[in-house]
Image (cartoon, rainbow, N blue to C red):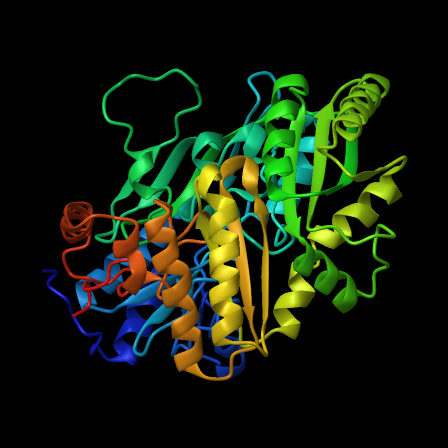
Length: 472
C-alpha cells in the first residue's frame, strides 16, 4: 500500500515553494484561469483546482514534482484535456501541472526521419511541421487540434491509422520522464534497433501519468504520402466487413484506415450534422477506407479494381469513391460526426473497447439488444477501427448516474466474456478503474501497484487513476 499523503499542506506554502522554482506568471491561482482546468472531456465530476503550475522546461516539471513530493502535495497532470476517462480531471486538494507551455518542437532529423518534441506540443501542429519538411507523423485523432503528444503517449493513443502504422507505442523511439521525486530520466533514443537492456520507456507509455510525467519524446516519422484515396462502402453484413478488410490488407499494402460504422451511427451522425445520407438505400454496415501512397493514378486504379471485385462478389453492396479532396472530406464527415454526437447525447456513456474480430459481430448484437431492452429511449451507437479490433460504443443521454453505471456494467462484462480490453485507446482514468478486473488479472494489478509504489512512494502523482484501490 502506498504511503499516501492526503494533500493537507498549506497552499500558500506550496505556492511559495513553486514560485522559487518557476518564473512569475507560471503559478496561477486566479479562479477564472483555474476554472478552465476543472476537467477533461469526460463526464467525471469537475473540480476547480486551487493552483495551476505552467512549467516551460523539463527541468521545471521535475522541480514541481520534487516540491510536491517534499510537501506531500498531490497533483494531476494535464495535457490538452481531450481525454474521455477523467484521468486529467482534478480531485479535491489536488493542484494542476499543465504541460501547455512545454510545447516546443526541438529538432527534426530530415535524414533519419525522427523528431524531438516536447510533451505539450499539439498533435496537429506537429503533423504540419514535419509535413512541411517532407515527412509524416501518422497518428491521427478527432481531437488532433487540441490533444498533446505527451498525452497521446501517456494513453498509448491509436486513432484512425493503426491498421498500418500501429499505436503510439510503435511510434515512440525515446522518452524523457520526470519522476515523482524530481529526478529527470532521459531516454531519448533515436534509433530503431536498440538492445541495451530493459526498454524503460514502455513503463510510461500507456501508464496515464501515474508513474512519471513525460516531458520530451523522440518520435518515428514516415515518408510523406503524396497520394490518398478514400471510399465509403455500403455492406450487407458485418461478416462482409471482415472479408473486405482481410482481402484489402492482402491486396492493398497502402491501406491506412478501415473504419466501420453500423447503420444507427451513420444515420444519427448525418442527422446531427445536417449531412445528406450517402446512399439511396439503407444498409446494415458501412466502411470508410483510405489508402496512402506516392502515385495517385496507381492508388486510384488499385482501389477501384479491388472495390469492383468486391461489388461483383457481393461483399460490397454499393460504393462511393472520392474523386477529389473535397469529396474525401465529405465522406470522412460521417465518421467524424462523433464530436457533435457527444454534445447531443450528454450525459453519455462512451466506450472504446478492444474486441477480438471473431467475437465482434455477436458482441454488437448482444450488447445492442441488452441496452435497447434496458434503455429503450436512448441512442446506442456502434463504430470503430475493426482492423485493429477497436470498437466504440456510445449510449445516451442518461440523466441518472445509476443508468450510466448500468450501461458500463453491461458493456464491460460483455467485453470480459469476449476476452477483450475495456480500453483500447482512451485509457482507464477514474471512469473505468472499477472495471479493470474484466481485462487484467489480480496478479497483473498487484504488480502494477507495486511499480507505482516504488516510483511514487508518497502517492502524489495522478493518484486515484487506473488502480482501483491505490488511494484507499
